[in-house]
Length: 361
Image (cartoon, rainbow, N blue to C red; front, top):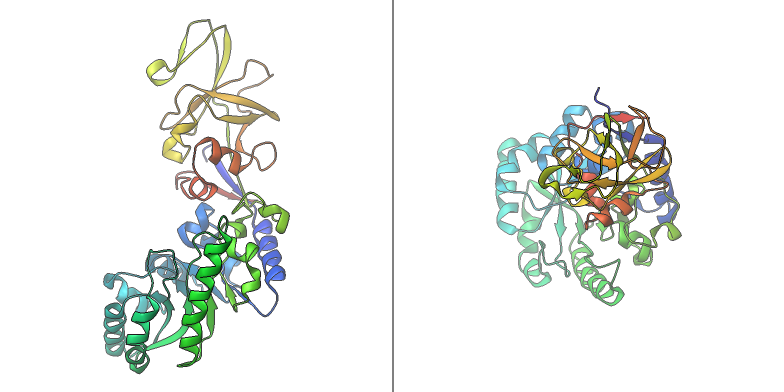
């Protein structure tokens, strides 16, 4: 195994789930979001870590099909309006699907009728994200036709809060639009799942009180906004580490890396670390990021390469194969690294390449 690994702590994953469940109350269904390879952690690839969840959320039908092949037997919900090309997979793998398009629902119903299957759907409401979703007026026009379809079953309704971390007024307006749509639907049919809140909504607007929530980044122990940890005790589930693969002493004036973007102003000791942007280490960390070696922050020097990067270890005692932490959830957090890279923790975690082994601790 290569020395670069993403260490995963399943016990922290379970701990975070229990913290969220206690926070929202036992009467609320917690739907863990395990899309994008469980935010890059690969926890979705181990049945023992997810098999007790009654329902999980994914983004695309292929992710649902993977879980079925893995042996996951409980409910799988597709968060995003699928393409018509995913209909066969949805039916074959007994997936519940979020929908926001009448034409798609009609085609899904027709295909399910041929297959002699019933497909559960959740109607997505447009409340202000302006991505996908039924406008309430459009839903009012077509709901009777949807409810008459013989092979799709309306089992839920949902929407997405776009600004629950930064804009209380806007979020409240989204809530009232969603409540209007939900009340309308409940006058027409019963609904098992009513869900509006993901991580930010859970922590900032738990008062909304619908019967289902969809935790994402907080399930993995990372912040969905700056004050996140003040509201809920969470434990990060991953740290990214590698090892020093080469050490050299260089004189003043030497240039480090591609384009010679870092020039030594005095003799320095430079080490190479075998992880690069092909592994998901953002190139924007060049000449500005830091890593941890022997409990010390040391700077990245030169441009991050595809498979490696260089660090200045002149001021510490190091040896070949010493551990190097890209983030350790202590001295350096995922949020720290993502911030330096001018991105968010979600993106940085999800982009860790498949060629980086995941080691479950």
